[in-house]
Every structure is written in structure tokens, then in C-alpha cells.
Amino acid sequence: MTQAKILVTGATGKVGGAVVAQLHAAGVPVRALVRGEADFPEGVQAVRGDLGDPASLDTALEGVDAVFLVWPFLSAEGAADVIDAIGKRGRRVVYLSSAGAGAGAEGEAPGEAITMFHTELERLIEASGLEWTALRPTGFASNTLGWAEEVRTTGVVRAPLAGLARPLIHEADMAAVAVKALTTDTLLGARPLLTGPELITQERQVVLIGEAVGRPVRFEEISLDEAVEQMKAAGYPAELVEAVLPAQARLLDDPEPVNDEVERITGTPARSFREWAVDHAADFR
Image (cartoon, rainbow, N blue to C red):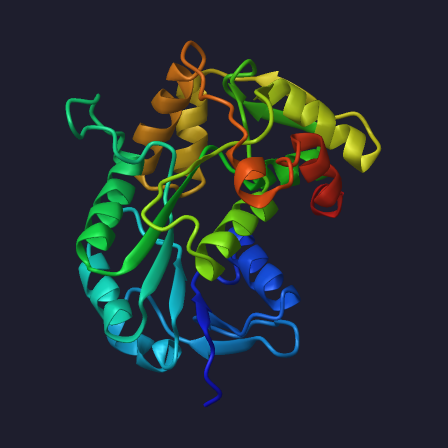
């Protein structure tokens, strides 16, 4: 097997896919971990493996120097074995964590269930002896793709918390920081907080999606109770439902910070939500 320098997990997802694309465009040898069939540009190596089965990672990790790690589970169970497997082959891991990671440590407020596994993953990685970077992004702009069916079929997004404002971040910006961490030493041992360039309400997000697709889309606010029932009916795990909505409600009064870390690290300002909506207009049409 041709050796590759960097292994990207979550390679068929939004962030991992952007990391693969940017590494490939930069001429960096890249290997994509996949569980099934997937299409990548010529020159990108797709190798089967599953983070839920550490023994399946041997082939994917062969000849790898660094790993971009996206953890796909809601607990840290099994993570120690995966990190151990990476440590036997590679020397560096760049972990896609969360802005909420680390809460509950050193006298801070208790962490939310949704971020506790990120905190544990960071701890395991730091203790592993690997070189490491933990990226801590705020909300993903791509999470608004959950509205796509409503936008396409009714032009109305029914969701709670119309006034919730977050500095949503474009997956391409997360990927650009990840590439810097994977290919240079500038972020070793760092936990950069990564944000979009501005706080933008959910109601405004919907308006901008409508402008991107070329027709009006409006936000119809529903209660948190109704939103809980919607999420449960859609099959979301109970622990996710119980963590996400209350945490979002608290952001109404205590919003996430906005910073310029993306620009400081990459030299390019973070992309706006308007830019993200234009980039993904086809997903909403």
C-alpha cells in the first residue's frame, strides 16, 4: 500500500471532508478513513476502518504520521483504545473538540452531557504522549442543514429560540485551522477557540438561507417542549435532546464569544454565515 502522511477520520462528513479536500489541494498525501463506499478526488486514498473497532484501524494507520480525529459517538467509551492505536503508528493527533470542552474542570461550571465526552477525549489525548492540538469550535453552520427539508418543502422553519444568536463557523474555516495544525508546529499543545465572525440569530440565519436560494424563507418559533418532542420523534438520543436545548436556551442570556482566531491562525478572516449559505444553497433548493 502506498504510504500516506495524514489520516482523516470523519472524512465523509462536512469538516473531515473539507480537511481532505484542503490537504489534497495543498499536495499533502492524505488518506481517508471510511466505513463504506465513498468518492474522493484522484490521489486521495480511501481505506476501510471503524473507530468503534480499533482493531480495524491497522491498515488505515500504516505509514501515517498524523491523524485528524473526529469522534462520532456520544461517550468516550472505546476512545482510549483508538488513541493507543494511533500512538503506536503516528506521532500527532488533531482532535475536533468543542467550545464547551473543559467545563467542570478546575472549579468551572459542570459540563453539559454533550461536551463531557470531548473533555474526556482531550484528557486521553494529552496523556497519550502524542503531539496534539484540540480545536474548540463554536456551533457549526452546517448544523442548519437540518432545516433543509422544511426550506425545500414549505419555506418555513419551525424551531425554538428565534432570537438565539451564535457565531456559527464554516466547516472550511475549521478545516483550514486543522490543516495548519496537521502540517506545521504552530499549534502544538494548543486549544484554540474557533468562532465565526459575528453573532447571528436563528431567525436571521433563515432569512439569509432564503436569500441564498432566491426565495423567501421565514422562521416560525415553537416552544422548547414542542421542540423536544420533535427531536425525540426524529430519533435523536434522549441524552442529546436533554443536553442540547437547555444549553442553547442559556445562550440567549450568555452568548458565546466572537474572536479572530481563524484569521490569526490562517491569515484569512473567518467566513460569514451569509457566505456559508451561498456555498450551500443547492442543499436547500
